[in-house]
Length: 251
View 1 (tube, rainbow, N blue to C red):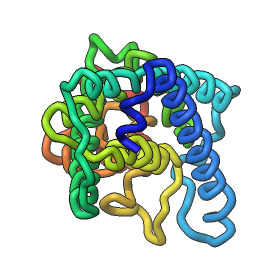
View 2: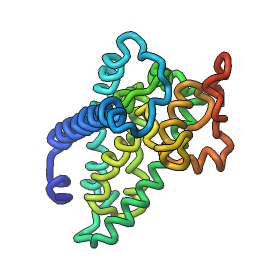
View 3: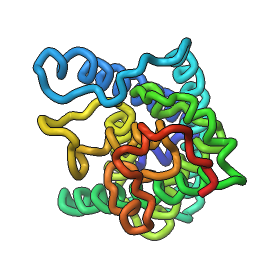
View 4: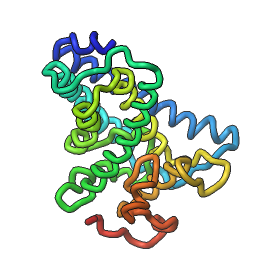
């Protein structure tokens, strides 16, 4: 599969990329919405975190912004393809199952660090204007996962580049990265706590932490894990979303 990908021309790679990210976005968004709004309430499992109604036209706006991000991600697939064609990066040849599994774990951890670092940058004075459109969704939905300004989409879409320069990854591990990323992103934007107890702890609390970030944006910059927020002192207190006013977003 990796050789087939490298052998394509640039136009085919970009078309494939746009289709791939479009399927990921709409399939996972619809599935997460159904699970959070239909299945889990019927089963009596979990709870909605922020019960405020969505703003007028929010879903249409999120989908429209996400379509632009899908173009950025899809067309941008030509960059790692070009790195492979130029010999700057290589794919592993006949990797073992264990190697693929380890690479997926490494990419998961890198994705967490990459997201945290870029998210912190997007909340600085110079870059926060590019992140403001995402924060128009004060109540997050699965369809806000790709609702980015193109600059933010470029920053977040760069996640595989540095690892590819440092290691010969398997094609399967690299192809799994965007799937893993959007599934975790959907969890964070579901506005639903998938846990029998509240507040959920650890990775199960990702949705609560990220919804709190949307409501009060000066903390909780992490993705699935809160390890970097704890390490760098950016954990939001549990009652931050209920405090009057909104902190200035300058850090």
